[in-house]
Image 1 (cartoon, helix red, strand yellow):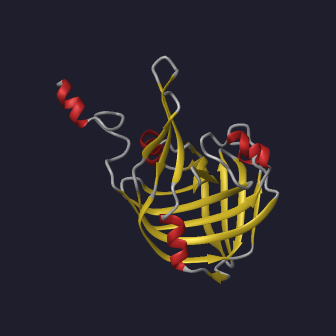
Image 2: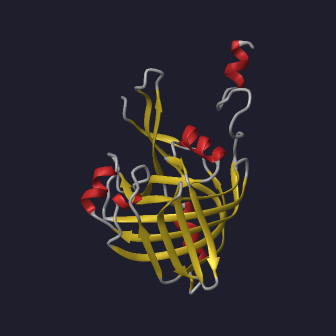
Length: 246
């Protein structure tokens, strides 16, 4: 194999059989269940990386059902996203993600720097309740519930909340000696968003301790709101906004 061939064709590992295809990455009927809650401000400050700033001690716990995603298949995801600002512009920092499908774990970590780990989330409707459940191995670490479609939200507002919000990630790729070769703050946007519906309702969230999936380290002090959104969208590629190694 020629050096030029490797340079031209390399984009992911393994070289001869990548774990995920080239984008774009389009999601159809992507279903969000997002619970916003108040947490301990000191613990929140300890895990949000500079130059991002927090203006309020709020966390969004998310369950995302993705039945139709280009190249990644059919899977479910869950995690914690923190409202932040960068240079005065409001955005969202992804602190933790747990999902049940290898290609988006590999692609998410290698391309964008998503903090993805293998786990077993579920999002489904039980009679009158939207229910999100997250297990790490055999241990339940999160349970969320919301009254199913109690109140219809404005679809245009939901679309703006998805498409206009910059999202931030801390991307780390190690060198062969174990040191950080890449350590960057990455920004990306959701693109070509089409909202099919958005709803709210009464909600509850319980988090449980786990040594390797410490979602409970950002404790639930008060549930503030909940949203259920179904949309089509494209996951845009990222840009580096801060290099920690320079």
